[in-house]
Image (cartoon, rainbow, N blue to C red):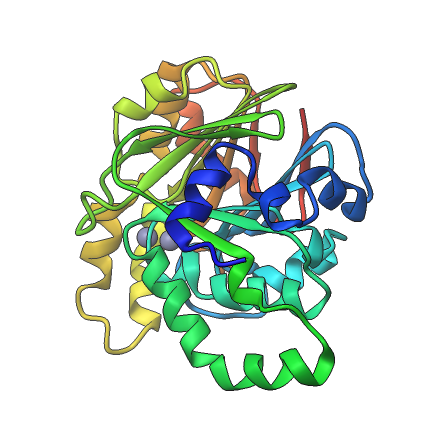
Length: 320
Ligand SMILES: [Zn+2]
Ligand SMILES: [Zn+2]
C-alpha cells in the first residue's frame, strides 16, 4: 500500500494508521512488553551532556502506561538501557525528543533500528522539534545498504515504513492516545530558543512534567502546577569549573552551561512555585563527578522547596 508520510501522520493522529497498514496495534505492543498494568517512569540515563563515561548514561527515559512504552529522549546508550530495564525493543510505540542536542538524539535512529532488528512489526510515532525528521531520513540513508540487504536476505519488512515523525512547531497539545495526553511547552535553552520543548504527560494515575533541557524559566511553574511528578534538569554550579577544566577544546563550555541550564537553587524556586507533589532531579551537570553527593545536589533546592525530592539514578523506577 502506497501511503506517504503526511498521510501516515494524518492517519496516526486520527488513531487509524495501524489498522490501515494491517500493523499490530498498541495493545499488541503492550502485550509484547509484558502487559504490566500501571504507570511507571524509568530513568535510563541521568547525566547531562554528550560525554560518554562509565557511570551514569546520557539522557533517556521511558514512561510505561499499562505496558505501552513512551521513550523520552534518546541519548547514547538508550537501547541498551531499555534492554536492561526489561523493556522489549520491538514493543516501542512512542518517542518524544526535547531538542536536537546530541545528548538527546544520538541514538534515536539506532534505537528504532534495534527495535526492527529484534522484530518490530508496528508503527512508532516520534514527536520532536523541527530537525527530527531530517535526522530520521539521514539515518535511513546511512543504513540503506544494510537495510536493503537484510530485507530480502532475512525476510524482514521495510523498517522505514514503521517510523512516523511529527515535528512540533509550537506549544500546545501534541497527541492523545493509549490513555495518555501529551502537551508541549516551548522553553529557552540558549542558543536554542525556538526548537526546544518541555512535555506534560497526563496519565490515568497522574501528571508527569519533564523539563530537559531548559534555562531557568518561571513559566515552567505554571506548566507544571500541581504535577504529581516534576522531572527537571539540574546544574550544580560549584561543579561546573571542574567539568569545564576537564574537557579540552571547549573554551566557552562554562558560559554555555550557565546560560542554558537551571541551577539547583532556581529549580527549588520552580518546584515550590508549582507546588509539585514530587521533584526528581535528572540530566545532572556535571553528572559524572562522584564526589558530588546526593545531599550536595539537594541542598540549594531545599532552600525553597520542602516537598519530596529525589536525585535520579540510572534504572531508577518511580510508579504513580
Ligand atoms: Zn542535554
Ligand atoms: Zn541541550
